[in-house]
Image (cartoon, rainbow, N blue to C red; front, top):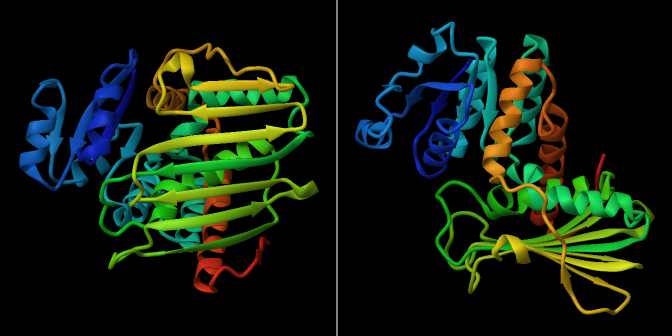
Length: 320
């Protein structure tokens, strides 16, 4: 039985709480939050779980093997560092850190402690993404890929202290590399904060890959609607993944000009549950997660380069 703890029971923390308590072979032993009222409300339906306002209770509990961190983004780095230093496996909701330096520090510390550091890059575990990846590989479409177009928008207000790059665009940054199978070699980005936002809430990003492949990303907190769409265009086929659609309509395929038809998604589990199951599997088998140290380092590097391009008014930045 794997024993875990959850730090943070806000919006995403509640999702993790519900998910982790539904997994057989997993005991969610602790939930921690600084807001006692919110904490009591969150765990009221789970009397078997201990709750605390003091993270030291979890740091000092030698039976806890892994910790899920779903707090405010600016607190991720220090919390992850403390728990990794105690030798506990750590799953951190995105963004893992707010800058590249802190991400490098965490990945090096996890390696030195021989423990697991995993990012909550949920879409890597999405059944639809797995289906698309398999389709690309099985039909030689990766070599024939022309471009990806990715749109991720909200119409509601953004969370304080986190910009659209680290909150929304980050998903498409790691997904573009995951689907193409190569690292980008340059970035161009434009965006801004409209109107009177403390953080950037709109971003247009181009990622350039070897052999002329391009991924374009549009991310916005102030759009007219919620969108979660990826369009892949190859010389053989066109594919649209629209995550706001029902399961049987999420992936539409167009081949040789024929009418669209849905691509069947084999798995039927929620992406977050698959992510948590993978975290537990990595603890049990002491193996590196799919969204582990190397992926965390990659995302931190690319977001750093995108921030550089944004600061320079859309200048092309080569990735090194």
